[in-house]
Image (tube, rainbow, N blue to C red; front, side):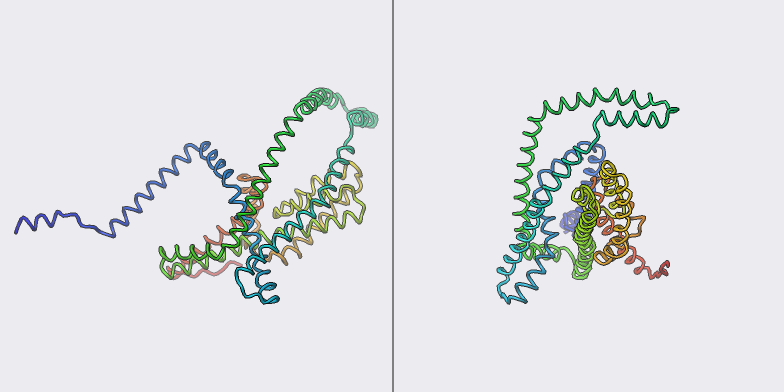
Length: 394
């Protein structure tokens, strides 16, 4: 009897509480180990991530395309095919809305290539022809010497004369390497087109299966979360989607309108290279705050080559358009979609530019806005648990 009692005391018994703690401990140790290794081998880590992103780029681009186009698909599905046309089949409505969306988008892209690309090519060709030659630059230098005889112009002439052989050698090397360069560029274009086609196909599948994907995601969350936490998480994800998606779609529309306004104004005033400059202004306008100024700089120097007086007028036009965008158009389209103060917007642009260049400058703002929202929600929750209510700063 004593022996059986001793055996029962030493018998291993499962304990759900300690088992859960052990699993959490193992996961934390593994995550910390991987994180420390990634930090101490940062070059290998960034190389691996770049390689992984490159391989997954069709899926990432396709998912992003589906995310951007989903609002238009939903509008067409609800307002046109269900309400106006009265189609009852959900699958047919989904198919027609996706098809119509891509017809509209691809149509706009085709129009862009038909009307804008030739104008861009012509503008770039005319700009190259308008660039001053070496003899013209020397003539300007001689004229400046006559106007300012007291200045030691050898400080300018010597670097210019030293640079000419280097420039000529670079041009000769470029021409000799032109055929391999064209071949490499052709392969890159073909690979890019293949990836683009794959991305479009993936985006179509994502849009058509979004209900199934959403359903499975909800099932997964229900398994691991309580009902209260599930409702809270879904509300948080909805707000994050509203902040991020609202900024992306709104800024694209805003930049398209600004680029079109710039093109109309410059064309009416007979500015040179109106299409090229308007495309630059429209694209850079997607970067908050700094975008209009970044776009104005190359436009100013392009016009300065042809007509210095018009370059000053161009800066005034950009200033007016920027004020119109900042005070009226932007708030109408975007509203307060990010909720960020100017300081944090500048930080987001700077950090995003450092991490991913121009694309990072564009995506940095909505990403920081989402992080700020999550932190704000977390702080509000913790303060509410402690029963602390702080007055808002005015």
